[in-house]
Image: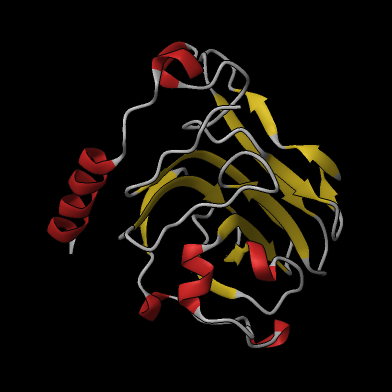
Length: 197
C-alpha cells in the first residue's frame, strides 16, 4: 500500500504543471495569499463556523506560508468552500486527473463534495470521505476515479453524473455535521494547476 501511494505521489509531482512566473510571488505561490496557488478558501456561511464567512486563509507563524483554518461548531451541517480556478464563474476539467494530495488536519470525519458549475447548489452531490486525523497534520491521496465517490445519504443522490462533476468542477466543498477543527496546508491535483488572479 505504501509503495502504491508513493508511486502516485511521484506521478502527481511530475504531472502538476509549473506556474507561469509572471503570475506568482515567492516559491511559485500567487502574489496574494494562497496555498499551492489556491486563493479562495472560504467559510460558506452555512452552519455555525469560525470564521462565519470570508476567507479561511491565515499566515502560518514563523513561515512565509498560509493555512486555511475553520472550526465547525455544534451538530448541524457546516460548509467550507474552495473555488478550484480561484473565481466562482470559472471551472476546471479534472477528467484526466488521477486524484489529489491533500495536506490537512481534522479532529473528526468530514466529506469533500466535488461540485460542478451546472449543479453547484444543494447538498445532493458526489462526495468522498475525508477521515479524521485526530488533529495531526497528514498528507493523503484521494482518487478522482468514480469508484471512490458516492453520495452522503442524508443529503440525497446527485441528479448529475460523476463525469459531469469532474469535467465541470467549480469547487471542492467540505461539509460535516459534527464539531470539527480543520486546517488545510496543501493541495496538489494531478494534471491541474490553478491560475493566479
